[in-house]
Amino acid sequence: MSKVTSSSFTDTTDFDNASRGFIAALEPCIVRNHEDHVIWNNEEYDFLKGSCPPSANPSLWRQAQLCRQQGLYQVTDGIYQIRGFDLSNMTVIEGKQGIIVIDPLISVECAAAGLKLYREHRGNRPVTGLLYTHPHGDHFGGFVEHAVGENIFVGNAMARRAVYMYGNELKKGPEGQISTGLGSTISTGTTTLIPPTLEITKTGQEEVVDGVRFIFQITPGTEAPSEMNFYIPERKALCMAENATHNLHNILTLRGAVVRDAQAWSSYLDEAIVLFAHDADVSFASHHWPTWGREAITQYLSEQ
Image (cartoon, rainbow, N blue to C red; front, side, top):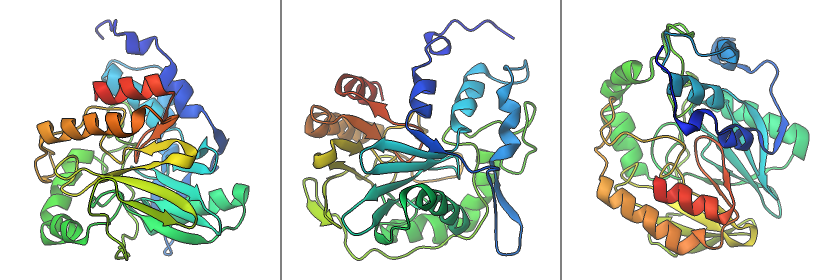
């Protein structure tokens, strides 16, 4: 194995941030469907506790170690995330009467397991709102036209290609499936879509959901054909959806999603910095772990 000298291998900030705010894990982190079939098994990634072998790319191994961390985490006051229960994160925002769920994962079963873990530690609060940041199946919906276009009209073709993109049917291990980079792998449970009752149509649009004020930024043609970031000013928390995560995104995906406009994408990142970064204390996303501190957030978005 070649020697790696990148500073990222000695800088533990990502590991510190990935574990910050940890409350509890699901032990074991295995989710089954109503037929008792395993549709998510995070325990298969225990091999990542070891050092990187010659068969694995060191950067992928490091990313996999970060992505396998699972459980309930506090992002800031009133904002929590369930991570490591699927390819993506589920975020829970506490309102006056209940909770607002952001991006309820790929599978119903994984979302239910995450919600159960949250309620065990934060009380049995009802779901009073559901927000989709973009129409990819791991978040799901929000923009029905694009959700249907990408996941139903060409869903079979994309699903076949996704087998190669994610490698989820490979045996988990140093010589098999290690990680997707965005998360460990994809769950294989029940996928549903609840149509939205309110659409966000312009940057600067403000909505109050269960007493929580949201300011939205529309970012079309970026990581998804329709996508949006949002800011919660009272909690100084910025959600970047999947427009900024702790990896370098594809412009053309192997599964055949709509080609991303890199120039438009970068311009919306610049706009997010101007609109929100100067006031935000934390930035979180639909994958990976948050970034804390205004200087760090600005640097993170700029490097993206």
